[in-house]
Length: 221
Image 1 (cartoon, one colour):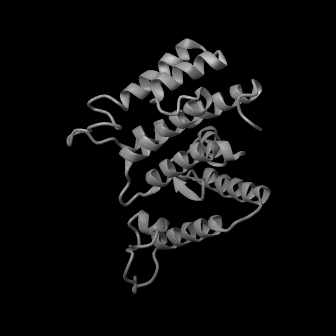
Image 2: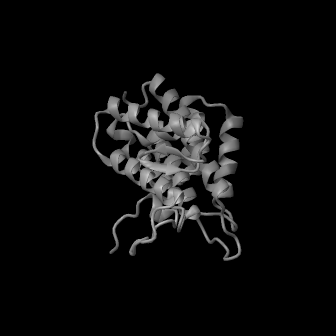
């Protein structure tokens, strides 16, 4: 099996095999720098040094009006600092209980970040699965889908029912005949903005529910 691709290969700038022998143009130079940064991001730092590295990289990207931000060791098409913060918070679990939730967001990020062969459909599936995983844990309904687990979580935490209904409709969007989790028609292809929206929305919802649950001692930490 081929190994994981770096940034320039995902972007289709440098092929997985082969050489550019006529010098390095600006596009290639930039890609190699992003490849280097992703490689550095793979190195295991302390939490404090990792956060500092990510902050410095994203500050430079923002200054240069780049269309990407560094999240969970990958460059993804997100430009808002607020959105980055929501995704990064979920992708960095603070307890073993939240590890499965974080894993779904990490996988959603990886699938979204592949610019050569992005998998928006499964990125969206992973994003909504993060919410489902959290609600199943809080509600204790491990054998149920998000619908009943979300309803029970709302009751346990006393969440606003309108908010619950709104997010349940988002879940419905990913579950109907034109959605993600069941049969997606061949003519229906999610686009980057669809996957990005669901990644950010699900991350924000997970963070919101997590804070509510911790205040009520329903989650550790």
